[in-house]
Length: 182
Image (cartoon, rainbow, N blue to C red; front, side):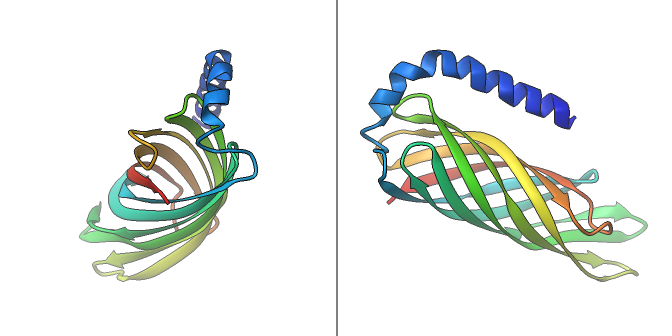
């Protein structure tokens, strides 16, 4: 699965690079070299952790350094619990992460992105075995963002969460966020 996702992302990047070169000059005005652009995101993330479907509201605050590189912090709060069998349930309490972000400007309004970082998640388990479990994680993901004007846009992304605690399953997350440049 990982190999298929990496191959698909690589193919998409190469395909876009073929027609993106003229757009890079147009994008230079929106993200000039050496300039720092701040942004915030607010949205929804679906979490598939070992066939357990959870949902979260997430927010990000980030800085983009020129056209190609950035960094962002992320927080998320779970909004539902999921039955895991035997009268047991699980809920994501919260998640925090920090990422390095790489951008590929496709046009003045459209960017592809890839990110890699480290996070921490805390879960609550209900039922007879109730309690809390937390884990660190190494995360990586890909996505895209489109700006309707110079400030407001939408971002969709996929992130793979590889946990460091064997009691907490790895997860695939899919998000959609409103983006605002400051």
